[in-house]
Length: 126
Image (cartoon, rainbow, N blue to C red; front, side):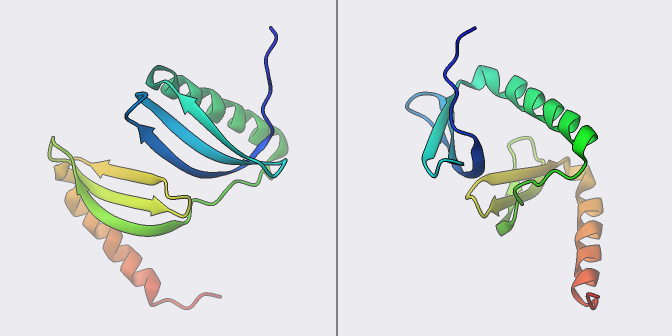
């Protein structure tokens, strides 16, 4: 099969749900110093994620020392979905938003984990 290959992507810089084209656009920096956007049809997103994750695991099993872009949180807010699930919406340094949703019944466990986090804030780092 003949394909055009893009530059190697080295960092994700952002994303957006493109309502005009009903697609998801991911923005990347390339190893060649250029910026790139990839437009995904919603139908291929789950398979794309599974394929990429599976091959990443394959590489990690061989190399073990793979570097990955940190998902540094720059903001956090609470979220609630239409079905009553509750959670946290993290805004990452790349401006990507990640929703971590939990059934309402798991809210006490979520609160307990956040209390554990509070305990870490008073510890000395060595």
